[in-house]
Length: 77
Picture 1 (tube, helix red, strand yellow):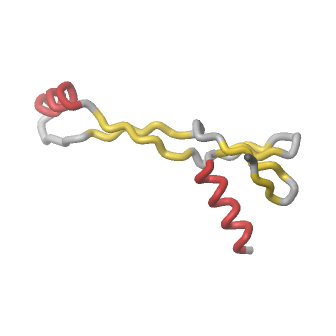
Picture 2: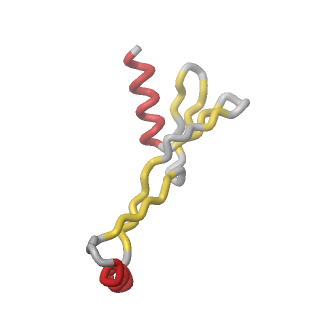
Protein backbone atom coordinates (compact mmCIF):
# COMPACT_ATOMS: atom_id res chain seq x y z
CA UNK A 1 0.00 0.00 0.00
CA UNK A 2 1.57 3.25 -1.13
CA UNK A 3 0.68 6.77 0.01
CA UNK A 4 0.37 9.87 -2.15
CA UNK A 5 1.69 13.37 -1.51
CA UNK A 6 0.69 16.18 -3.91
CA UNK A 7 0.01 13.64 -6.67
CA UNK A 8 3.37 11.89 -6.21
CA UNK A 9 3.45 8.27 -5.09
CA UNK A 10 5.44 7.55 -1.90
CA UNK A 11 7.17 4.16 -2.05
CA UNK A 12 8.38 2.92 1.35
CA UNK A 13 11.55 0.82 1.37
CA UNK A 14 12.70 -0.67 4.70
CA UNK A 15 16.11 -1.59 3.29
CA UNK A 16 17.29 2.01 2.91
CA UNK A 17 19.34 2.05 6.11
CA UNK A 18 22.82 2.96 7.26
CA UNK A 19 24.54 0.18 9.21
CA UNK A 20 26.21 1.46 12.33
CA UNK A 21 28.36 -0.53 14.74
CA UNK A 22 29.06 0.33 18.34
CA UNK A 23 31.59 -1.16 20.70
CA UNK A 24 29.88 -2.90 23.62
CA UNK A 25 32.66 -2.13 26.09
CA UNK A 26 35.38 0.51 25.94
CA UNK A 27 38.71 0.01 27.71
CA UNK A 28 41.62 2.46 27.95
CA UNK A 29 44.29 0.02 26.81
CA UNK A 30 44.30 -1.06 23.18
CA UNK A 31 45.56 -4.57 23.98
CA UNK A 32 42.69 -5.28 26.36
CA UNK A 33 40.15 -3.61 24.06
CA UNK A 34 41.09 -6.05 21.26
CA UNK A 35 40.36 -8.95 23.63
CA UNK A 36 36.95 -7.54 24.55
CA UNK A 37 36.02 -7.12 20.88
CA UNK A 38 37.20 -10.65 20.11
CA UNK A 39 35.11 -12.10 22.92
CA UNK A 40 31.95 -9.99 22.78
CA UNK A 41 32.01 -8.33 19.36
CA UNK A 42 30.06 -5.23 18.35
CA UNK A 43 26.45 -4.09 18.57
CA UNK A 44 25.00 -3.45 15.11
CA UNK A 45 22.10 -1.07 14.71
CA UNK A 46 20.38 0.13 11.56
CA UNK A 47 19.76 3.85 11.19
CA UNK A 48 17.17 5.07 8.65
CA UNK A 49 18.88 6.70 5.69
CA UNK A 50 18.01 10.39 5.23
CA UNK A 51 18.30 9.98 1.45
CA UNK A 52 15.14 10.27 -0.66
CA UNK A 53 15.04 9.51 -4.37
CA UNK A 54 12.64 11.23 -6.75
CA UNK A 55 11.95 9.39 -10.00
CA UNK A 56 10.65 10.84 -13.27
CA UNK A 57 7.51 8.72 -13.09
CA UNK A 58 6.22 10.73 -10.16
CA UNK A 59 7.49 8.46 -7.40
CA UNK A 60 9.41 9.26 -4.22
CA UNK A 61 11.38 6.35 -2.72
CA UNK A 62 12.71 6.40 0.85
CA UNK A 63 12.74 4.77 4.29
CA UNK A 64 9.31 4.87 6.01
CA UNK A 65 10.63 6.96 8.92
CA UNK A 66 12.11 9.54 6.53
CA UNK A 67 8.91 9.70 4.46
CA UNK A 68 6.81 10.22 7.61
CA UNK A 69 9.03 13.19 8.53
CA UNK A 70 8.46 14.67 5.06
CA UNK A 71 4.67 14.22 5.36
CA UNK A 72 4.65 15.89 8.80
CA UNK A 73 6.73 18.78 7.46
CA UNK A 74 4.44 19.34 4.49
CA UNK A 75 1.29 19.14 6.62
CA UNK A 76 2.79 21.70 9.03
CA UNK A 77 3.05 24.35 6.31
